[in-house]
Length: 272
Length: 104
Image (cartoon, rainbow over all chains, first blue to last red; front, side, top):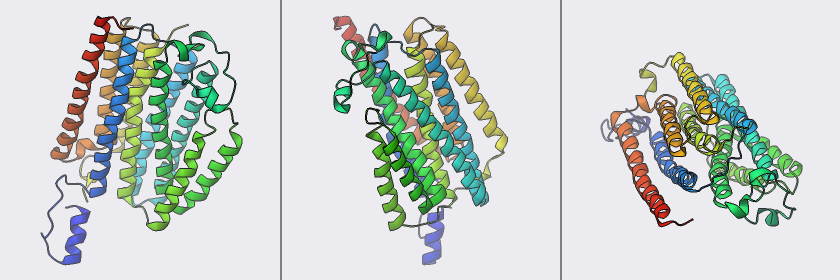
C-alpha cells in the first residue's frame, strides 16, 4: 500500500476508505514520471529536428575532430558515472544512512558540475572558431572572431547548424544545471542556499563580459530565489522518497545525453 | 510505500549496467570516429539503435521502471513511444518531399 493511503488510514481510522494508488507508487514518484514523459517529448521534438537537418542538409558541417570527440566522450562518462553514484545515493537513503546519502549526492553533483564545465569549454572553443547564432556577437558587443575552418562563415552559409546545435545542447545544459541544484537542495537543504549564492556571485564576477556565459550565469541567481522560496515556505527534511524522485530526474538528464552525444557529435565528426 | 527493495537490489547489477553503458558508448565512438557507415542515414540508424539499448538500460535499471507495476511500465512506455512515432511521421516524409521538390 502506498504511503499516502497508509497515512489517510491512520488519520481517519477507516481502513479501505481510500483506494490504493493506480500505479502502486507514491504520488511524488508518479508526478515525476509524468513530468519526465512530457519533457521527453520536448527533447524528442528537438532531436527529431536535429536529425531532419542532419540528413537533409547537404553539405552538413563536420566541426568535431579528435579533441572534441574525446571531450564529449569524457562528458558522457561523467554523466554515466553520476547515474551510478545517484543509484548508490538512493540505496543509502533507503538504508537511512544520511552521511552516505549526502556523500553520494555530492559525488553526483561533482560529476554533473564536471559535465557543465567541460561543455562550457567546448562551447567557448567552438564560438572562438566562429560557431554562433546570428547576431550573437552584436548582442554581446564583442568583435566577431576571425574563425577557422568550416565554421568561419557558418552563420551565413548553414545557419541551421548553430541553431540546432545550440538549441539542443543549451536545453540539455540547462537541465543538468537544474539537476545539480535540485540535488544540492535535497542533500543540504537550507545550507545549500549560501553555497549557491557564493557560486553565483563568483561566476558573475569572474566570467568576462565577452563570454557566452556572462548573462546565462544569472540562471543561478534565479535558481537561488526559487530555492529560497521553496525552502522557507515549505521547510522539510527530505526523505528517501525525495532522494529517489530527484534520482529519476537526474537519470533522465543522463538518458537524454545518450541521444544527443551520438546525434550531435558522432554524426558531425571528421577524422583528421 | 512502493517497496522497491522487494526485487533483487544487489548493487552488483548496477555496476554491470554501468559497465555495459560504457562499453556501448565506446562502440558508438568507434563507429562514429571511424565512419564505419558512409551513408549518414545508415550511421544514424545504427547509432540510434545503440542509444535506444542504452536508454532501455537506464530506464529499466537506474530509473527502476523494470521493477514498477506492469500498468505503470506499459502505460509510460507505450504513450511516449506512440508520440515519438507520430513525430517521426510528421518530420521525415516532409523532408523527403522537400528534397524531391528540389528546394535547397
